[in-house]
Length: 295
Image (cartoon, rainbow, N blue to C red; front, side, top):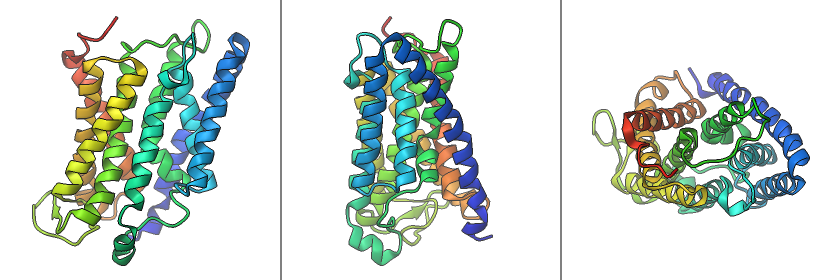
């Protein structure tokens, strides 16, 4: 089965993420305009600016930039409170994610072009953005649902487990992209995760020491940025970072098995890997890692 025959999976990921997230943004914007118009204006303006930045930097197509802006807005609304401060919302980890993944994608581009693994000059498409950020967006949407009883806006608290779940998904997205992009340049001969045998660079499911180390570091950077911005404690940092690393290896496992067999395409793998990171974070918190969260 060719990759083109699996394009429906990319469309499905986009359909699962974008319409619901967009509706939440519209409803929340209306709610915040009624409560405090400044918050709505800042969230929508900064999200749009981030999308424009991604497009100008050629990190994504116009559709991808718009998708990223909608997802960012949904997460910013979910983490906004009063008094409002943009640097104390999900804007920060999303911005850090954009910067480090764009830098990693451009690093060693000449070598990647020779290998035939480089991203297109126009950057990522909308389905790729939804696959990487969609789980975080859906977690934010769930937070919105929790506040619907007394109005759409739910007072933000770092003690709410879903914020760590969303951050874990962002950490995994950073880890996966950076690991792959850096590994192609500095990783040398990668090995297949399931067999530990050497394979060609760019093979689905392959890992390298340099790429893995870069991915672990990227997950830590996004987790730290998110923890500081959202006012979380050591538990938020530890859980989201560990979950992001778990998702990184789960991504390689899916790549080495289901993707190589032609059952999943890369967007589906990325979406499921972010979901695995979110699930891992939820399990860790259920096991007691949330006990030391700040009140």
